[in-house]
Length: 449
Image (cartoon, rainbow, N blue to C red; front, side, top):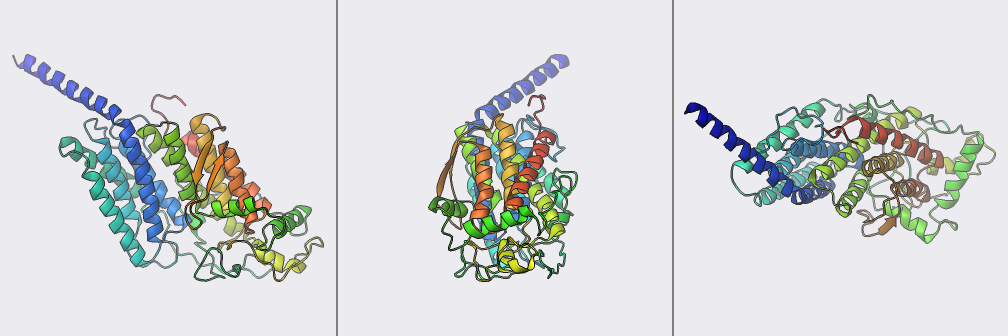
């Protein structure tokens, strides 16, 4: 009799687990919307918090890795990034996604003063955390109460905590002093065009986060794993070409830049982590990805972009190369007869307060495009997307991921804020990073590529 009861209990448990798995599969599309909506919620929160693009890349990598691990804590389809918890097929994937995203966000939007800019003010941070908490309560209220919801919350908590534990001592909040050089070719605090474009509180700002290249990478073995060769010598033909190209097409008063190129400069000025995450959401929706696929794609892209900033920052502060606006105003000091100075030259858009080479904007575009290409097994996938702040509402269409990455890089030349070599070498470095990330983490558990 006891044997019969034990067999009955075992059969009942198997039926319950099978039913849960079937429900999880049916909820895939709905949960996919949650994955995308929480990525969009994160983007809004980070803007509210005042996190710059560099800091946002770290935040989004943590959030998306946690969301990925949460879903795979319900149904293990892909290797987790950090979680070692047992799979719970009875957990609600919706509750798991919401909880993982919430916990990760509120943990990496620090409410308190920090020794350097980039993380936002206390007021901004407080408002962002309140926004995330409200979004979580609203989202969680749509999940039916019961054991599945409770289990999903537990899975989400565990996934977020596992990723956060890896980043607890990554060096992101370590202040590193930096003194600009004064020799030809050295980066120096840059002026903005008059009036500032986009609006900004000041120009000639100190260098942004000079120690970021030393923080712990997410996937790369080290920040210098794919180190670039460095900018061209000031007396070289290549430097003269780069100089004269950006001087002509990137000037505020350029008579060779087209209206479309000006639009391109503004379209891509938004921070790369937010812009390329939006592209991933658009493509995921149009290609009909389920929640697990969407979560993996967003995690891979944001892990690659976060490492792209770390690697790019390492090179930037290693080479310390000046920005076009500094170089063009001092063209008589570089030892190159083919670089005629223009002391009154202004760029179309504001120059970010950090060295020119390599262009991390281009690195992130190259990395994201490479992840997308490999994820979908080919490059020629058309998509249309619309820009966010500071030039929100511009819509552009692309025939391939690589075409978008090239335009993303060219936008910095049209804006007058990067040399050609910084862009081209940045894209190449980004492709290496994207390829490495894609082939080393979050692999399908069945071994298929």
